[in-house]
Each structure stands twice: as structure tokens, then as C-alpha cells.
Length: 285
Length: 262
Image: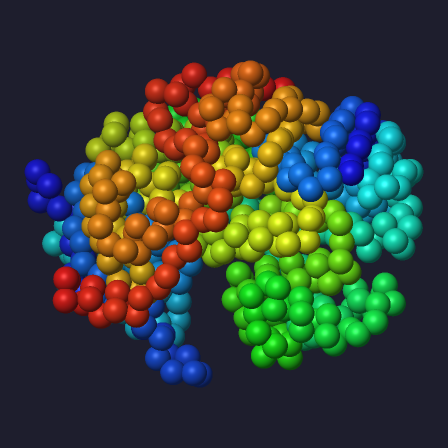
């Protein structure tokens, strides 16, 4: 990375105490994020979402987060008090959730929600906030911003809801966006259109992105760099363009078991999990 | 094996009227796997439901349908048809009764169709989907998503069907589990000479599993093609070409050229 990284994560551990014993959701994840698009891929239960949530202090009650280092711009995120975390959340690092149906407030108009996100982090007048909100709605390529401003979340489509979410997360101008499966609930063409909006805004404002997804092909084509997670650990890190040459058997297995348009129609190779992957990754970190 | 002509499905009345499927036709030979591809709201699932007779009192269905050697009208189906045609649903979490054991789930269709040797059939169906008999007395919440989908497949197989309607059978699963379930479906088709109708939004899955497919949009068929045409990246309609481009991954320049189709 050319400049100093925005976010430093070293040896991140997230564990949960459950009735059946301690569950280690994330164990020993380290990475740095600059003004780039970093993809975190893995299957369900790999710890990718837990990693994203731990950065923002959004780990569910009962979970324990430890790290040798978890820093945003020299602020220690593990020791920051509630007040500074409130400033950072949304203001410096914000998160785009998977499903706009569940993550937008159903009883508030879209305009009021986006304005709120802006007013919490900026001391400004409501008329200024309204103007900025309308600008933002057009920036995310919503054709009738005035109409959507007054609409409730249930009145817009999934693709539009996700654009609204992006607008809401972008309006305080954070440095980092964490997007957890932001487009998995959308149709492919809409998914790409929403990503294009996100991509353009990222490059315009020079933000860093952590893109959490289970979709290897999408991450490989959208991001700059990829972390592959398995069982709470990063098993491989590579440039997105070089994913095809990935060496770890887990990454190879994931790539091979995808049906493809051009591949053979016969039996798909099945991923064989090796318990040694979990211990081997520890040494590599 | 399946012949549908000019199928129309209409939900609701007056201002709430929704024409979900419009003049839909498809012909599937015995032993074929046929794909129905489209984005959400294109009507692909509704076609399956209309064929299976699951739209009774929900929608108005018209058109000519023949399947499993029976001529079908409206939403009434004979008991024999219901045995010969089975369906596997998308969500393995929502489609298995949470308070029923695997054993109850699998033996119910056998009982409904008055089959003999129910216990043997349950054990055999589990074996066919790669699960051992120890799964019989577990509840759905005690097994993984992939195992649940195997149970859904076993439930469909237990009546010895000829046609299996697959509604997004792997879209809720991780890719490694998807590969296992797709392999399983292909093996079962070979072993039992099944005919599949596979509904999916994933072009790669359809290209992998099917011999022919129809692309749907807004309730109508946009294009019907041989799988080779899809594999050669040579669909003839602009809508299908755009869908194909989109499924190949993120490409900033291509997205600007996307059109709205309606």
C-alpha cells in the first residue's frame, strides 16, 4: 500500500460463550486496509461477517473481542469509549447491511432517515441536510429523488432500497465502508448496477472498502485484493486478479466446485476439507 | 412428458390484478432436464406451481397442460399425478416441518399415497441422498442446510416420481454444498430416469444441469434455446445477452451499457 493504512487489524479474536462451550468465531485475523477495495470471502460460518462487525464494535452481546491491534487512524477501537465509537460509527467507518428490507426503519421516510445520518455527524441546518440528502439520492442514480425522499422503505424495490442504504452510509463521508453481502439479495443486473454506484462513489471520495461476500467471482471482479477465510482464519490472501492462480487447497476447492457456463457438464469436484488447514493457517499468520 | 401451451396465470382483481404468467409454452421430453431462467418476478416459480396444481383458489390458471401422461385443467390433480410429480423447494429451512422428525417428514408422503413397506422406503430414500439411518430421528434444526436439502430431495423421491420440479434447489446453500447437491440430483436422475424442471436465476447452474432452457421476463418467454447456445455465449435476444454479461461478474464498462427491459 502506498500511504499509511486507514485500518490496522492484528490478531483479531472473536469468541462466544455458548451453553455447549466456547465458540471461536474469528481466530487470529490480521490485515491492513488502505484506500482500496478489499474482499473477504468465505462460506457461512467462516467468520467473515464477525470480522466486519468486530471492527465497528457491533459484536452481539455475549461475544468477546480481543486483538493485539485494532486501530483506525491511530484510534484504538477496542479501548475507545462509547462516545468516540458513536463518532466513528457512521462518521468514519460505516456499514452497508445485506437486506434493505430489514435494515431500514420501516416507519420513517427515506428522506428523514438519510437526513438523520447526516445530522448526527454534522452540525448544520435541516434545510442544508435536506439539500444534501436530495443530492445524495441523485448521486446513487435514483431518478426521482423528490419522490423517493418522501417514500417509505416498503414503497421502493430491493435495488432502490440498497441504493438508499448506500446514500445513507455515504452522506457523512466516512473513510471506510464495510459492506456485508450488500447485493446478495438482488438480481444480477441490479446487483451490478448498485455496485457500480458504490464503486464510483468510492473512487470519487477515495474511501476504503471491506466487501464481505460468499461470491468468489463477484469479489474477484470487483475488488483489488482478497482475503479467503475458513473456520475463523485467513487461509489465503491474494490480488483479486490472481485469484485464478490461488494456491490454498480450500480456495482451489471453492473455485473448482462452482458450476460454470463453459465447464464440463459431468460431476462437479467436491470440496474435501482438511482439518490441517486450521492449524496450518496459524503458522502462516 | 410435459407439454404446456398458452399458459396464463392471473392473480387478484381490479386494480390489484397481476398477470404473472402470459402465454407461456414449453415442451419437455422424457428424461430431459429443462431450465427456467429469469430474474425475480419473471414468473418462473409460478409456472412450476401452476403445473403442480398449487395455485388453487390463489390464482386463475388457463391454458393447456399435459404432464405425466395426464391432461390437466385448472388446479385439480389426480392422486396418481401427485405421486408422479414431486417438487423440491428453495428454502430448506422453510420447507421442512420444524416439529416433525426426518422420519415423519419422509413417511408422510408414503402414507398419503398408501405405499407399502414405509420404513424400508424411508431408510432407502435416506441412503439414496447420502445420509445414513441415524438421521431418521433428528429434527430439521439439528442438521445443516445441505443435509436439509438432501432430506427435501429424499421426500420428493419417496413416492417414486417421474417428474421432479426443482425450485432454486441450491440457491440458499454454500457453493461447496451446492456442488454436492447438484451432483446428487444428477446421479438420481440417471439412476431413476427422472425428468427435471429446474428453476434458477443462476445461468451457470442451468448450463451445468440442463439440456435446454427458456429465459423468462415479466411472465413471458423471451427466448428458448439449446444449452449449447448458452454455453457458446450466443443467445440471440438482447435481454438474454445482458443477463449473461451480468452473470460473468463485475465489469464497470459493461454496466453503463445495460438497458431497461420491460
